[in-house]
Image (tube, rainbow, N blue to C red; front, side, top):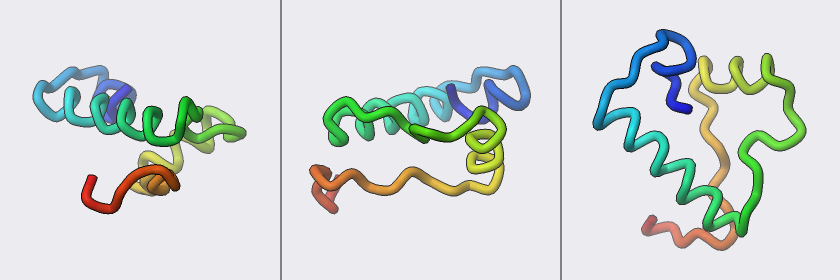
Length: 64
């Protein structure tokens, strides 16, 4: 879920759609990986609040 939906309980297209699409791309290029795998809900929330983005998957070309 996009940050504004989690923290503000708001859905704001197209920003929410862009966030969701980027997570979908991450999952595809990581070959079905789980974003923030091994982290607790609090750790995930902290990462999102601090704008710590997911690392680019190995199979993702830099142009994406």
